Image (cartoon, rainbow, N blue to C red; front, side):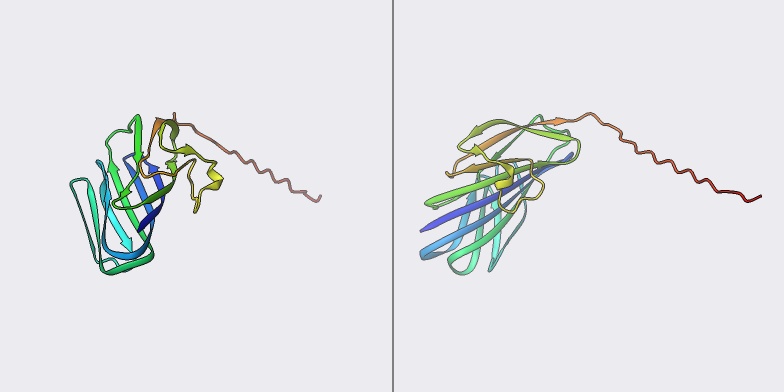
Amino acid sequence: MLTATDRVTARLEEARLQIAHALILHVEKAGLYSVELAPLGDALVTEVRGEGLADWTARDGRLVVNFPSRVLGARPLEVWLERPHKDLPETITLSALAVAGATKQTAQIGAASAGGIRLKTSELTGLRELPVARLDRRTDELLAFVADQPEWTVTLAAEKLPPRTIAEIFNLVTIKGVKP
């Protein structure tokens, strides 16, 4: 039996969207030697890390992670994805990285943006909003969601904010007394 919990962090920047999946696989009974994650969509896999990881391959929208020995119990697995873009997209869509064969899969999703970019929730499917303060391992996320099912998507509207200048002025005047 295989279950998975996922903590997703998405960060939109001027030239790319970075998505980090911090999965914890819970393997019971028979164990497993490999796990398949899908769909990757148009994202590129930039890194995969985990304890006792042999290798990984990404092709045809799937990521296959192999282990050198049978995996039992809880096993953390980190997957970093990236979507480059020339111009800031009007919307971005985040979706689940489903674990093949998992009987249960849950996720917490956090979204952040670089300075000068505003994110707003546009459309939710299979998840609900969550107060940002309730996110596990919160960093700089401004939006938060939770999903209790393996198939979820969230569409976020991205808007470039107009530039603004903030100036601080400090004046220092020193008066010295002169003796006659």
